[in-house]
Image 1 (tube, rainbow, N blue to C red):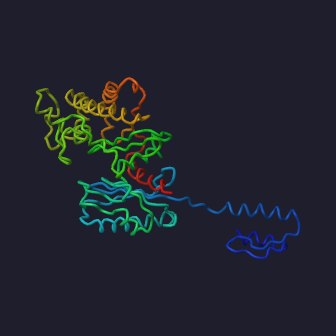
Image 2: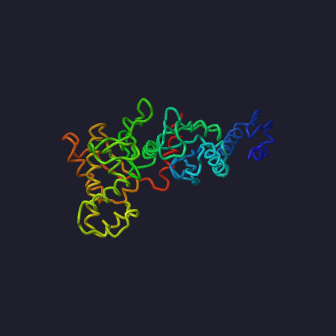
Image 3: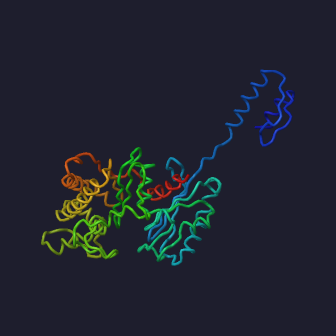
Length: 367
């Protein structure tokens, strides 16, 4: 483009171009100078603009998902590697880098990447470490952010996976525009992220927001992972639905198609399918699960007065089977000043991309 402009203006004594920019100009009249400026603007704006991208990495006990994401939440490239096969974190980082490197090149090279955001169980935002995560193969305190930063030569920020989901929801999902909300993830366990006054609450040590481990039934169901009794996660997770099902099958004599399912095959999906088919015991299981969840949410509402509670994860697929009793029991257990003020919403994020989007959102938060 610069050469084209130069040829048009040789008679105007345009003396030198460097990288498409004019260093010395001499015009014969006012018209030529205006015309040149217009052409120069066209040349500048015609150049393609490569916006920054972020990498989101979600580390789970079984697998690690990753993707390259733009600012509006489009996942341009994605993939997954095994977590559990790596007994040493160094080999995990090496495979992650080797798998991501060609994707980074396809996206325009490392110079286009702003940063890497990582979500992981027991991830500490302040220290960049994973600390005593029971579901990961690496024990103790792992300096994951530093290891990744050294390998990728990019800024890396790490937090708890549920906190990452909350940031992702605020940037891309149902919480856009909200400054006060609570994110609850209902999967194998129960995770949470608390946003107040537009800021994610990390606490003094980086581990705030473990609402899944709050005690909702004193001396209640035993949690094998923590050794505690009566936590929300013991009841309102996919694992909790399974345990509730086994308990009711043993304690009651009500007929149910679930009695024909081998014990090791019973999970929340089987219970959901039975409930949709009209099985009364299965519907009671979701009613009870919603009751426990609603009671817990009432406590959370009275703690931080959020505009909304956003639910995400496999259990939300049960729809009103769990959402209806959850709403009813939340409203029944808050004091009057909170009645009908707090919305319960289901996440807008596409489930297959949600973990990646949540983690990538961390990268955009870096200054």
